[in-house]
Image 1 (tube, rainbow, N blue to C red):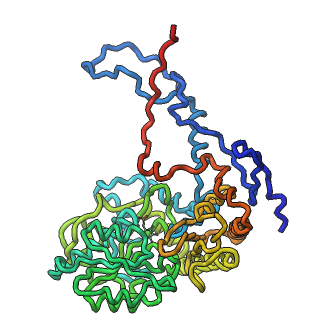
Image 2 (image 1 turned 45 degrees about the vertical axis):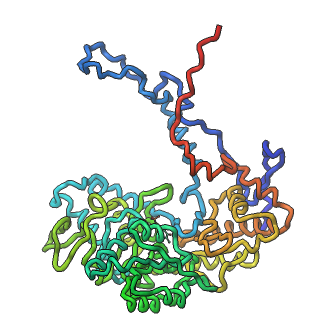
Length: 522
Ligand SMILES: *Cc1c(COP(=O)(O)O)cnc(C)c1O
């Protein structure tokens, strides 16, 4: 392949050197001031006639000072926000390899459906007789989730994966209370490779978190897990496929051992994309699992939301599912918001109203447009793509574990040893190549981890370009002569390396006008 056309030398004022990128990426980024700093007092996007002089009836409550809005014309506002949006790498910009996040394409059809007035404009306090279609949609989504997971019940209200974990673990605690064992079962087992939300959820509920080591194959150490079980264990929280991108082969044995010890099995289902349509978690013996609709079933995420984290529940936990849920009575749908049905003992409510309606519409739209065979294909292609990335990179980067992977390819920093380049430097250099970095330094069980999840929605040509860029960087790092260049990266981004610790510890969230400059000093 002739890459000469992709090589573009670009003057880099700061470094005083030419920056050559492999992909030909170049920065096209103006320095953007805050909108308040662009204020030109009196300028507006509209011309209003002068306000007529009327006697104020506000009794002294009228504003005495300016509102403090910046003065800009309409094109200035449009350009400001468009430029800001272009500083943001997005799922619509290119490969978004962030592992554990399932950053897949969001079909535009989902958006069209979510904006239908009957879905987009309903109010949660409308009488149920006027939102029968919305309730039917919620009911259909519940049916799909129960069918795909092989579980008898689902709680739809949790607003994200972590909220779903809270829902499932509260259900477990309430079930333990019903057995009179809540006081003595206070330990929760969490494998080392778990997402940080798992131990956090258990800790928030007052459980004592106990870490279970991984074995040399990146899977939970079964013997250590069994040894940790006992009459004081409430639950295990296990992710499958796990955060090393591997299927927990012993999952049935885990479930049997956990149940034999009288504990419950929470499965983190954030990685459901790798097995959707192919494996029913209910067949694996789990008691509850959250599903990130915003990962497996598309729906936009990143940048803080919105999300949706329904939880499917086994027969043992179903009676404790929180309000609300829908039932079909004759031809009508009804949302159950109070009281109990059958032997149900709902633990209460997790969230106002019914859950993330817009996400429900997008997820069901995604399911219906793929069909059950299409979802099977989603899982197959996601796993195929990840294995393709793994196979094409394994001679220049160092796979963390031998063998094939599921939906994500995990590398450690062994290939960078002795080069002076760290995982962080490598990730920053990817930005200059025009890519959002993969997940770094997670999972913690792998030294200097680099976790790549291509998802099923990337075309082979795009994966090839991405892989070629990574191969180029890996070889450049190994040449031993480019450490300084890696350490200086990124040079093409609007900002270079930031003090991320300071930014997290002391965020500056408010703009304050500069002190008024003294009027023309005499
Ligand atoms: C994303 C993720 C979560 C948390 O989900 P949120 O929707 O971000 O709260 C939990 N576990 C794993 C493995 C994840 O990838």
